[in-house]
Image (tube, rainbow, N blue to C red; front, side, top):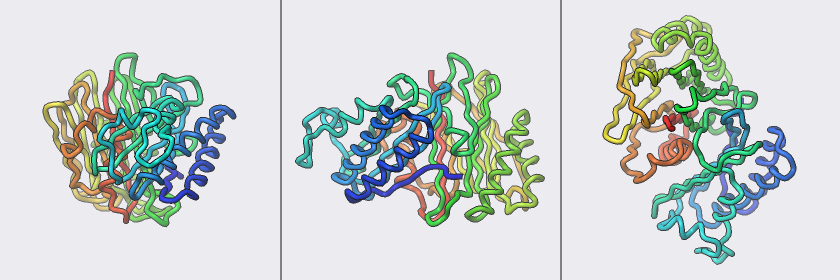
Length: 355
């Protein structure tokens, strides 16, 4: 259950490894030679940019799916000096490191989708998407990861008007081969269910608990969040157990229903307000004294953040001017970069309604 490929990038030799990993993933997904070449060039340019400018640079590679298209998402995260003028940095010939200054411009041209978030002294996050088949250059509707590789279900858009853009990071604790965290989505008519689960502990036993939680989540998707957690509680008795939360967005009723047990955090953001959701203490499958469902308002254009306790809870999006208008994957990436605890599995899920 390899959720994503995370690579530290701080020296030139790591650029070659990043390129090889990306080409291997592209081959597994069925990219032809020409498209693999684009993937290799984009990853090389991004990695070189991290070597030249970044502090604690990270490169994340993962498969994505949108509207029956398969692609690769490349996320670059650093805590370097940042950019004061992104448009100028995208112009060919501009450089602060004595190079030809074609890196960001080339990445933008080669990518089917491209976005940057940066702030002076606050670091930079770069998102590039390349698709196996022809796709719009707009980063508009990232539904989910590819089921065959990451074990999460491919979701489809609700209809031609309402779409949900989902960006995720799901990574194992350093030194572990698998993550005990998992995420999943199910869409039915005008409602969508979203799950984040964190198996107790780390490694394979934790992953087995989360996988069972995901199985029950899919089998019980016709139920409400509280009922799904109650069904999961019975099914996880033979496992380590898990913390988990389920959000249900009903677009026709403009409501969000939430139920959570354990340390899974959730918050919703709208232009004029935001609020955090309430989860009760306990471990699903073992000790669950209370499960309660809460109903909140949902407004068109809102977005939801859910995360496991591998991410600190002290984050505040107000400290990132302009980030909330960016792609969900950039929001998830910046939160991971700045608030991951580094000693646990971590999942960050950002879901935004777009039109």
